[in-house]
Amino acid sequence: MKPLEPRKLAWLYMAAKERIIGAGFADEIDWQEEVQFMEINETVFIREAAWVVLSAGFRETVVRSRYGQISAAFLNWSDSKEIMAERDKCRIKALLAFKNKRKIDAILSIVERVAAEGMDNIRKQIEARGIDFIKELPFMGPVTSIHLAKNLGMTLVKPDRHLTRFASKTGYKSPDKMCQAIAELVGDPLSVIDIVIWRYATIFNGAEFLNPPRDHSPLPHEFVYSIKYPERNLS
Image (cartoon, rainbow, N blue to C red; front, side, top):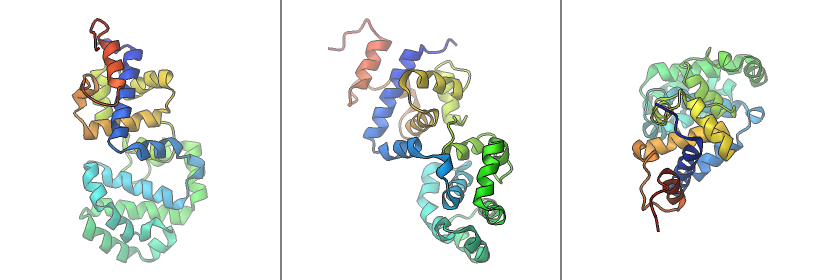
């Protein structure tokens, strides 16, 4: 399949972005754009690592519905050493909210490593070794390690099932290639393009990315149609 022409792809992306902003997810886009790796502290690192561990293989809505209770069980990720001091209590409370022992124990293992090595050393290791270091953490495979790196402020694209499907439908060999084509035209960071397409896939019919509803407001969809179907008069 020939890749979708980049200008058409970029307009489809902008239409999708406007649509998820309209659905109330502007803050999520802003967060992804503003997060900076060098500003990541211990609390943020543990919190984001826990989110990725919990999300692996689970719907985001399920994780989000229980995340507040899990956070409270882990002292709101405030201090790795305090969590280790209350390890058994934290584990019991977390399992009441999320009955997956492997995931809860994986989170505790990550907290333990941060407590033992210190956040400054963890950050230096990520700087030096990148994804390879993250993959050493529990539940961090080829996709989840990129997910965590992206949430920590690295400019990456995660090849999850949503982005892989979109790349396939638009004729690109990988999510990274697809997002690169968009980035070159619209100027958004790769991590922002990733989260826009991912969020779109979770709340709308994925097929609409290539065939957005013509009656949708705001108007960028009309520009999309003028590009995809220049012979049609939209007036």
